[in-house]
Image 1 (tube, rainbow, N blue to C red):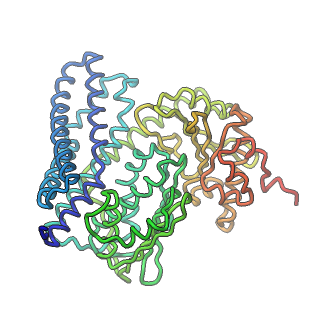
Image 2: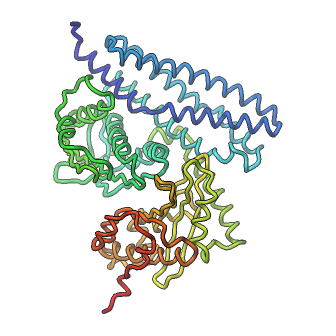
Image 3: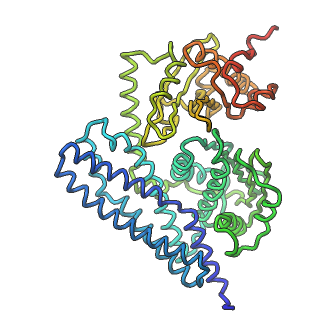
Length: 519
């Protein structure tokens, strides 16, 4: 048997870790598909000069993607055939370099011409309608590019840094993880940043980010069969430590699997998908931390990591490289502002559907041309049963709509909802609580001295009942099924709802509000 040095084993493991969590092939294919659609639209509308210019770039992108795909196939073949570590390492490095080159090409300024090409096309063109989806994919590719960049840097120098955990989580979730979760889960999984205490750690910041991403991937995979998924990330200072938690409401992990994850040797044996957790364990060890898993089958999993923090240390807030070197955020925001303006102009003329909101939500679902049809909405109903906000959209064919895309954008302060199909093809409502407790209290004008958790749960509970009544009165079928995120928090005394979820909408509408109870 050939003996391998520990350095070689570690290098191969690192390559496997990185390739396992890149998951970039689909996003590159989506960008290619978008630009192919641009070509088709330019051809349909006889814009020949732009077509010739754009097609040359597209062909170069396709060539790079073909080379990249062949490199991945070669690497996978070597791994599956248990080839030598040297061969796997060489093939892995080659593939990563090709991905890096492809990502860099997609981020090249030459694609700025796309904006001009789209301006020549009608607003109803497929490529115009799918542009935001393409930008979301490019944003993800941008994150992959910098992850590879930092991975390559790690091999050349010590990347010890002092960084603030809370700031790092906010930035990484917003600029990298959010796009992945939205695309991977068809926007059915919501990321919640819970309590984030400032705390300074010392170590490899980029490796820390890769660890977070692995934990997020595992959580998303665990909720892949959920109609409504919630991924909660938090950090809490506890003495000289900071506790990082990643919690999902997915399928859970059996006790024997937890033991395996916590005790397996850090080697390359076993299934490839288990490598991600080996990487997590190695990263926790490098930060001198400790790791625990708390899980209940069919209920969910919480990963808790205790890190020793640098007490008294202060880090200077700095803008991340990813944001400084791309204008993707500005592009996406520009599109949203344009859509918001168009929406407000439209509703100023025709009203906003308040009198028919239930019918409107159901109608959006019926006209949706997405692969999985549905509609999305945000709604607020006052204690006097008046609608103070209602905004809605049908799912669209080319991209996954989130509540951020609604206009006016008050998704953090209002009850949010979706109407989409169950596995048996029957439609069901999904209600989500406001994303921010503070924003909800501000929106409702609650005085500071009354802002308590029990007040929040009571207010949202009552509003869900009012919303149910309102949308039934305005055209929503009363027998349509309902699911409520965090149902037990808002309706702790109604176990029968959890047992029959989805339950009929009229069941929720018939419940008694706190304000309706006898004194």
